[in-house]
Image (cartoon, rainbow, N blue to C red; front, top):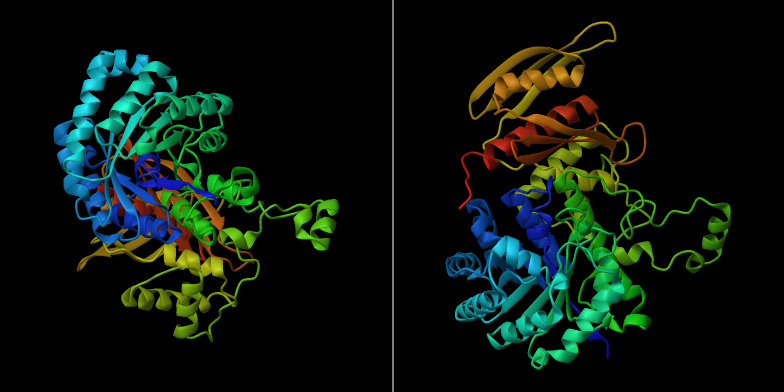
Length: 508
């Protein structure tokens, strides 16, 4: 019988900490529900003590997600544990995740504690967390650069104090797969009470080895792997959930392990996250990239036509990539539209469906054929009401021999605004006019991209902007068959989010 490997997803904690990957509350909830449908075992919803916003997000996810354990990360500090428990206590399956560094360099320079002080602190903290929550995970930060004798003591005492899961991260992505195997094997053999808890690995990708190291940990006995959708996370990121899960599934003959992940939901989860953080899926990204199942070489094409197994070790359908899209058009009714959303794994409330259908009909007047990609983009860009500034209309005049002129008309609540501005191009002029209306805090435009959602000359254009506001960044997205309009909507979206996210929220 195959050994079950638990998937601990930290997209909303470690992943969201990466520069440019921040999400607002509604986006975090959307990702959490997608992870629930994906059937991950544990969702690490955030670091509740880090900010009021993170606390509220973790609490909301804990209250709404029912099919997964919900974990909150906390330092080994009683007050932090209290805050974390307050955030997750309403979860169906709550987990307190306590961490403390154990490597010599971290203990000396970060903690300024002796090994014995670290042991004492971790035991006290795990026991205190256990007094509040039955499921407690302890992470020995920088475990893989720790002294092995000391690490064995750490794991043993954490389990004795009540930890149900002990995580040994390769925090800086330093080790090679053989070294991970050796260390996990040694823990499995030397820690006398190791059978009383699940051993977990959390691998970073600084040397491009996160997935290989996670697989090595599993081969040596680890029963949980911590990962993120698309591998997002600090620095070079984490083990990518889609790569790890599909490696186990494709080579079950080798690993003899499985997960409860519904792999047909992988592509949708990946695409949703890329949309939210304002990135496009890299063409050559394993499992979910556009080129993952494309064959251009004549020899490859001949082989695939004869039998797909000649050059494909997994099918597009196994990760939720459909080869044939249902085409919708202006004669498609609300029922057909709703049915297609269900087939695409998109769940909307009645109000959201009504709004999306109105936008769909508007798009049908501009495009003769509406594809799955168009529908997904429409839903991803549905309006979220933050008491926003709203675009009413715009006029842009541009040429190659004079400055561009933009006239913007917007409203917020019942108040209407109109401004005009000059710029080096139509987008620059429009953004200046928007700034005059919205009067945002000082910021810089860090990234601007636009790409076609599907194929054809009448395709939707999706614009993505990234704005820097001090140490924080905010992504905005806009969608239209007119690339100037898409660019304008993306900028307004980002400024609205900036106003909400940075309106006085402070670190606790």
